[in-house]
Length: 163
Image (cartoon, rainbow, N blue to C red; front, top):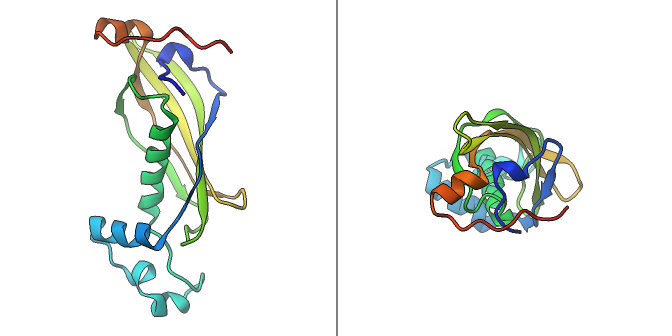
């Protein structure tokens, strides 16, 4: 997929990423990176006596996977300026070692800026598990260049894709 600019987006568009399977290494690496060694994540014996009877992968890692899977789509490769925040993020299903997840990204709103060089996209992130269940759900706006704004910055812009 090639870079898309503010001009290319419409409310209702949905983009779907490839999937990835959650591994033991993912959980351990994120514990090391974050410093979060809560027993629900890292102690198999403790976790065996909990609701899910096994360790649960950090919810924040699900958010990180959403942004990584978003990058893999390539649609914001040259056009994203800044993520503006996260809203209403919900952890609906646990992420477990061996689960396979993918991202479904919905475009909610397209708001051109006053300068004509950029604007704001409203986006909904849905992290879906291997059973088609919604594991995490939330919104994140992003500031994105328009085609003209990219040209003004010296970015080579491909012609719009045919629909």
